Image 1: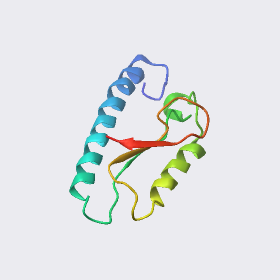
Image 2 (image 1 turned 180 degrees about the horizontal axis):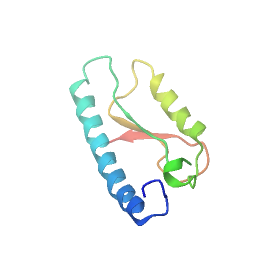
Image 3 (image 1 turned 45 degrees about the horizontal axis):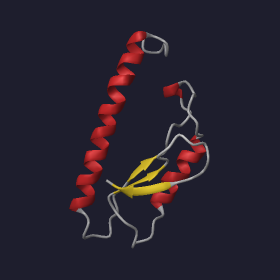
Length: 103
């Protein structure tokens, strides 16, 4: 049943689970960033945008390679980079524009 991407149960669970987990990730990112703000550890969140994956039936506007570019950018930030930020695609645009900002 859950291996059928068109089933009602799959759609229901997808629509329930994704926003719930996204909210949790956003909250914990902010909490860790605040707790570690006086250290060299940077805590931010990658927002790859709508990426074509099995999860969405490959309907996303971005490729997995474009999403990986955002993660790589975060992993290689300099020591003086901001913390508690979101990094990535804040729009559904298909270009390579990467934005960042504070929660």
